[in-house]
Amino acid sequence: MPPARSPAAGLRRRKVFLPLVLLLPLILLTLILIFPSRSIPALRDAALRSQQTCDYAAGGWVSDSSAESHLRYDHTCKEIFKGWNCIANGKRNGRALLRWRWKPEGCELLPRLDPLRFLEHHRNTNIGFVGDSLNRNMFVSLVCMLRGVNGEVRKWRPAGADRGFTFLRYNLTLAYHRTNLLVRYGSWSASPNGGPLESLGYKQGHRIDVDIADQTWAEAPSFHDILIFNTGHWWWSSSKFDPIQSPMLFFEKGKPIIPPLLPPEGLDLTLKHMITFANKAMRPNGLKFFSTQSPRHFEGGDWNEGGSCQRDQPLSSEEKVGDCLELGVLRLIC
Image 1 (cartoon, rainbow, N blue to C red):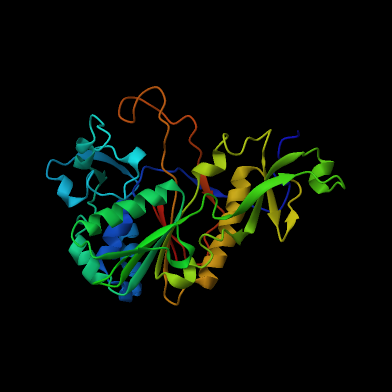
Image 2: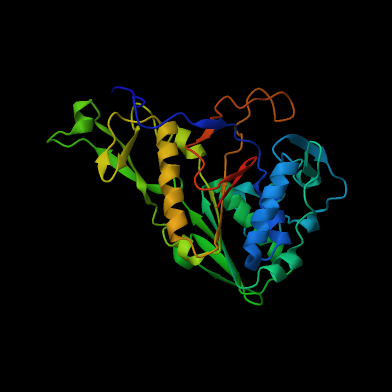
C-alpha cells in the first residue's frame, strides 16, 4: 500500500510547538477559580496579562512539602479509574506524587484551587471536558476535589456526555465527553466499483471526516459555558491506526482528500474545522480552551532519570483562529 503523501499545495506551513507536561489543571483551574463564570471578559484579560508577564511552559517540577493529600484527593475518590488509582493500587511513590508542583521560571503559579471557593464562584455554570483520557483525568481530578467538600451531587449524562455531575446546591455541572479525534471516524474498505483512494492502491483503513464533530460532543458547545478540548495521542497510535494496514484516510465534505494527508496535516485541518464549529455553536460569551499533548512513554529511564519520549510527536497548530492566545500548553480560543 502506498504511503500517504503531503499535499503539494493547499495547507500552508504551520507553527510547531512542543507538547509539554500536564500544565492544564495548574493554569486553567486556577484562572477560572479567581474569576466567576459571569465575568468571562475579566478572565480573558487576566489570561492576556499573565501571558505577557509569565511563560508558564518554561520551568520545572519542585518538591512541595506543604502539599497534603486532602488538598487534592486520594484513593477514596471513587471516580478515579481503577487502573489509574496509584495510591489504591499500592504504587510505591503514589502519595509522594501529591507533593510536587510546577514552578515556572521567574514567576509563580496562582494559588492552589480552593474547592469551596470554586463552587461558590461557579454557581449556575456548566463546564465540559472534551477529548481523550488526558481530559478524562482532568475531569476526574476536578470532580474529586469538589466532591471532597460537597457530596450532594446528581450523576447524569448531559448533552451526550460519557459522564457528568451536577453539584445540586450550586447548580454547577461538570461533564466529560469522550472523543479520541474530536471528529467522526470509522472503518473504510475499498469499493469494488473503484474510486480515488482505490486507484492509489488503498484496500482498507479508517475514514476520518475532518469537518464533522464526533456525536459525543456535538451538543456540548450549546450546553456548556466553559469547554476544555484536547486531542493528540491517538493521531500517532500505531496500534489503532497502522500506517500500512489501517491508515488514516481523511475526508472533507464527504469526499476523500487527494492526495492523502499524513496525520499532522489531517490534525491541523481537523482543528481548523472544529474550532470553527465550536465558535459558531458555543453559547454567547462562552469560554473555550484547547490543551496540547503531554509527553509520555518514557524510555531509557523515568522522567527524572534520563528517560526520553522517543514516540513523542509535536502538536502543530494550523493558525491563530480569531484572537487565540497561547499559554504554554493551554490555548484560549476567543
